[in-house]
Length: 151
Image 1 (cartoon, rainbow, N blue to C red):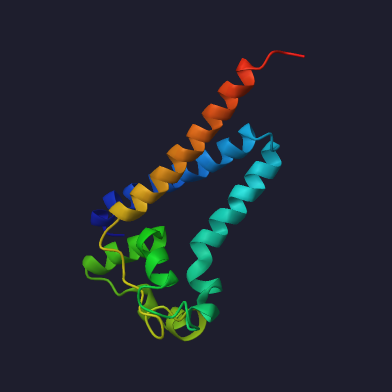
Image 2 (cartoon, rainbow, N blue to C red):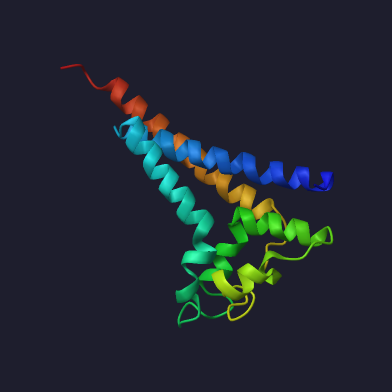
């Protein structure tokens, strides 16, 4: 529990929460029930956080297997990979070198050389952008409904 990691974690978790809130707000504005909006956002969040594992079997096949392919583009904004890069810069081992990840769950770092994020900035910016866009959509849809004459 290195306190030097706390700023990086806060810089990743805050915008990630904003992205999830923005997506939920946009779905609610589009008349999805709270349960449906919550379920969809939860599934999207799990898919996004888990892609290094579930997408792994397909990452070794062309056209996804090249260095600048899908894994390279996705890893730059991935919150867990951004935190892993921060841990590595503080002297820890990257998660792809841990036995379970390297041998069982993923091909990142072995057959697919995805660039580790340079920092948490890209992840924070990407997630903040998704959150602001979602809240913007919710605001636009809400304003448009307010302007309609009641029937």
